[in-house]
Image 1 (cartoon, one colour):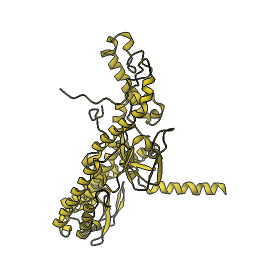
Image 2: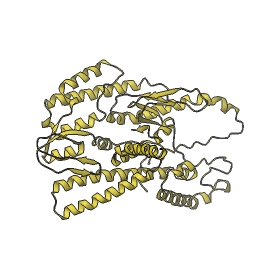
Image 3: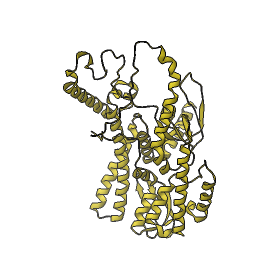
Image 4: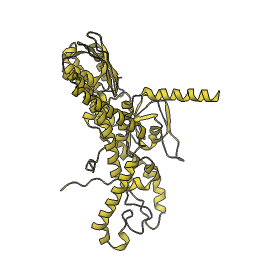
Length: 210
Length: 221
């Protein structure tokens, strides 16, 4: 049976989130000649020394690890831009600054494999970490202020952050919804005489192993 | 002329369809399938195209290796192949998981059954038969007469209450591709709407966005 023990198919693992981020295009500067690559996912190339070109992140990391190119860090990763974003994040209690949806994954991959291509790498790294902390803290505190709604807007939250809070927020919102709904049903229940139990067809929770 | 304008219209649609590569479409289908609580429409044409392309590249990689092509190129092509294969396999695996989880429901509900592929339907029927047989032999035949059904708790139950159904009220994260305005509540209750701009992220009940996902206006994240 195809993994019947996994009760949480709808949760993405961090590796899967990174996998999705790896298709983002980044700019590299190759240091060798290579023909055009006709992948299933698209055509990339020509690769000419010193001519920058855009490729998906996974391809860029692969080439960098083999010493075939160097990275051009994306515009949003400059010290100035990040400092500005950090200030803005600290100021506002409820809104998030616009950052690339996969900024966490992109930054992490660049730090791991291409740190020598980033100017002021220590500064940039500490800025990105601070920004992550502030945003996560903001998310946590805002979670306390949810009410019973059916839709919550979360603008400018990034992929990794969404993935981290998803399980908790999901259960919280479901609980709110379930407790708000029966208030409308109370009238109906008192009328039913012989107990006609409504079928509760939610999937049963898996039993804990003893 | 009517026929000319028709072909022009459909070729414009064709172009917008082709502008998203198959891999992107497959990624979108995989993401939606993983995040949705119930099984979604099977993307038969997309899966077929992806399979063909994968087979083509597999063959050419074998050729490259035999002809001693630059090993760097071979490994890059292999990586791209691996990524696409992962998407395809994970997509099919997630669907199989959902079929197993809601086995009896998928065969009972016509809407769900329509969304399965031919092979999935065969798999689901066989699985359900095997499971029913197993339950009957091990437990049900030993219970008193009124309680022997696989689908109902007892003869008195009016609905099939032993059949787990997907939980459509679960909350999902979604992003809209266009401006969309949705009705928040069921028919007949207070019609509150939520309006989504292109690119907004929302935590929202699955039931509300179900139709929009099928029409491609909203993506699950």
